[in-house]
Length: 373
Image 1 (spheres, helix red, strand yellow):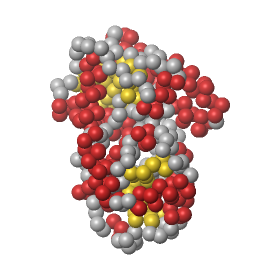
Image 2 (tube, helix red, strand yellow):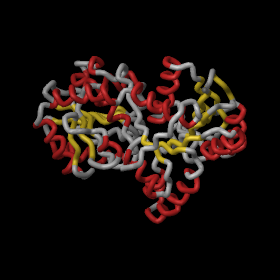
Image 3 (cartoon, helix red, strand yellow):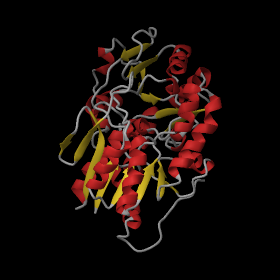
Image 4 (cartoon, rainbow, N blue to C red):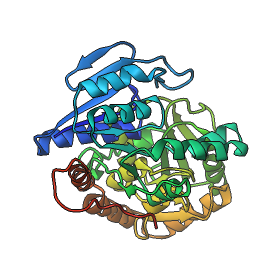
C-alpha cells in the first residue's frame, strides 16, 4: 500500500504535526512494507526520497511556515504519485487538493483535524467569525471518507460542525528520545539556582493561546522555592527574577534533556487540540500541571499530575502547590510508566494502520468509527 500525507504544517522548525509525520514515516519504514510519501511546502520544487516539496510563499511572521496558494499543482503532484490513500493534515489548499486527487484516482481520502480553526480564527479575529469558520469546516470536511481528531474534545468540535464520520486518533510520543535518563544534574546550577529550587518548565511557542502571562504570574505568586524555565521561539527575554528564558528553537534531544532535568512541567493553555508536549514531559519522567480544558485534560490523569480549575494565575499556583504537597518524584515515575504503556508511537500507529487498511479495502470488516463522547 502506498500512503501519502500532505499538509502545510511542515516547516524546518515546526511542531506537533511534523513530529507525527516523521514518527509515522519512520515507523512504517521499520515495521511494514508500505511506501509512505510526504507532499509539503518548500522554497522550490524538489524531492528528497519520498518527501516532495512544492513551491509556496512564506507566511509573514509565520515561524518558517509556507502557505500554498494554488490547488492545481498540489492535486497534480498527489495524483501523479498514484497512492492508495491520502491523508490531509490541514484545512487549506492541500486539503482541497487531496480531495481532488482522491476523486481523480478513486481512492479514499482522510482529513486529520490537527488544528481547531474555528477557535483559532475566533481568537484572532473576534467571536463574530466563529459561525463562518464552522460553516467552512463543514463545507470542507464533509467530503472526506473519514475525519480523524487527536482528542475527544476535537472530535466533538467536528460533530458540532455537522461532520458525522469522525474517528479519534491520539498521537504518541517517542519514549526512547524522551526518558528520565536524559536528566542533567547541572541544569539548576547553570541557571544560577540552588539544588533545593523547584524548577518548573514549559516548552512551546510564545502565542496568545498558551497563556504564558498567566503562568508567569502564577510563579510570582508562588514565590520561593519555585522557578520557571520557559523554552521556545520568541519568548520575551525579561520576565522577572523567578523566570529564566531560552528564547530559541531547540532540537528534540536538547528539549528532552531540559525536560528530564526539571521537577515538573506546567502548561497554562486551555485550548490545545492534543498536547504532544505534555506526553514528552510524562515520558521524561516528570509530573504535569495542566488546565482542566482542551486536549491536555485528556492526557493528565490522577497519579501523573494535577489539573488546575482554570488558566487563571491563582488556580495555576494552587495546582502547582497541590502537586508538590504530594510525592512529585513518584508522580513523575507513574507518568513515565503511563507514557510507555499507553502513549508510545507503536500503539498509536498500529491502530492508525488498521484504519488505513479498512478504508483502502485491504482488510475485511466494517470501519471502526469512534463516536465522540
